[in-house]
Length: 341
Image (tube, rainbow, N blue to C red; front, side):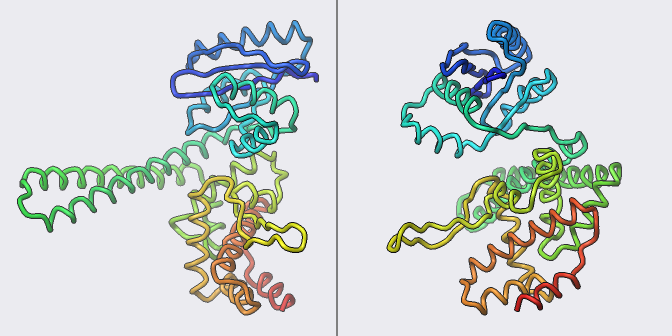
């Protein structure tokens, strides 16, 4: 092995690190999840690299709600190979090894071994303007959820006797504040797209794809940029559907074991929800996606499975439009559907 495999189990304030060298693991201890901790571990890893004559450092961490991103960026700047595998892949692999216990130290050792024995894709940070857009969208989503909760709370107060007026006034004040904050974020998103005209152009082209509208176009755009970065622009539509977790997953064994086909559900559930709702809405319109959906239903496919297939088709079309930087051509799709019938 010509690289030093480093596994890191990361949390909000600290992280635990381990290395895997010549078929054996070694724990390095706990470090602060801050610049000082990153530098301290980097010095330790340099010493390990010299001692073991390795030419590269491969850092592996599981995505943990963003706590890993600062260290991932630090490692990327150091020239390390950084990987952020799907936690489910790692857990399934650990079960195959017979590992049941779970501690921070064991998780770090497991990730180090995972890096040593598996071929992992290198993580690439998003372009700066896309990362900013993603942050704005996350904040917009947070505010929408908070606003929905407060509006529901206000409605429940209207039907309850004996409610203090000050409580109602307070909830109304919070609602107004959240509405103002949401409007501000939405304005920031619009300004961001005006500033980076290529993002605006990308979004405009994606809006031509059936099933993509105002509510899901920007999250899908960020997803496509991330997939482009992860695969150095060489990713396939099939790989993208697996990355999102909307790829079909059959369960068959021998002649008697059969289970209903479903999807893998790896990846971001929010994206899957947006694609599914896009497919549901578009299947009621007059477009090529509806034709695709109806053709599946006519062939005996369950409506829910047909909608999942339509959601997958949205993603495939979106990736083609994004990768080729071209406009969506419904006439071409209609021709392909006609030939398939």
